Length: 74
Image (cartoon, rainbow, N blue to C red; front, side):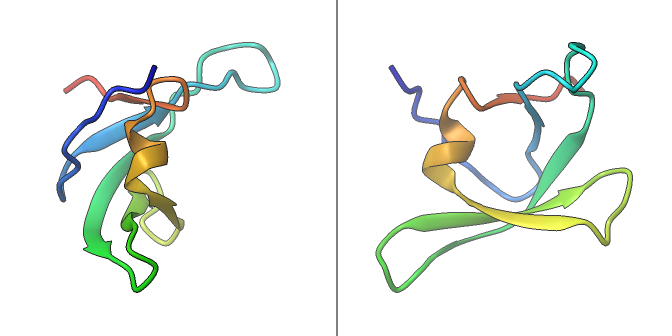
């Protein structure tokens, strides 16, 4: 079952998938911006902490799913 997190700018997340070598992913993504799109869904623009030029957009539903992403430790 999915946990419903309130996603806001500044939050940090890690992908839960394992790397090609079977180790936990250490990449940290920071939420840069959250908005509601015309399709009625909320989206978050994420910025890679190690390379700010690397960005991606996900629905906040996907980002809230603990099977896909977990909060990064401070």
